[in-house]
Length: 276
Image (cartoon, rainbow, N blue to C red; front, side, top):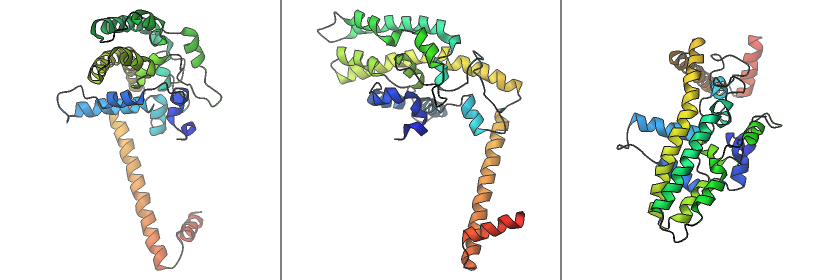
């Protein structure tokens, strides 16, 4: 995979150093929390998971790329902090959310301690609290986050590997989290059940503080610029029409070229000079 040209470049270190558990990530992304397997709500849930895990969720930079005539040119800043570029990577780095995240990490640290102490089937449980308390999964490291806000030499803001909790914002399961369940649950069924239950609650509350907060303020910003869903739909329709027209034109020129024993390149060149 050529990660330099992929959104996954933002987590290149985590990928190359095996910090992501892809097996449990796949289980989580495919997990259906609803009673039905066919619904618009489920489709939206799965779509959001996939977009966030691929760092392609519609933040300012993505919308600007997809709707160049609709969004203003230049850098679109985060509508929460108004200081840094609005990107998928920024969501966990935004200074606006930090105090709330600290409280949330402490809550889920205690929740994991209670879960493992009460439900484990391991004979070695003396180190549960000390291991969880020592994990960066439940620590917000200010120096690390502040450094990560500074773009690298290629202009990208990367996800810091020292903050594994940030992967949950993108529906990626870290090896740090998986290790706790692997070490204290011997049965695969129990591991998966408790992990999914824990991750469901953790991501829901973490997303409420970050993604939901950003979405609310961003929609207000769009409203101030009169950017509506209807205008987005019209832009998509126009782009589709232009694409279809170009395809039909090329097909027509190919037929014309075959009839006149002329290359398509020659006909396009003639058209170009005729227009000039």
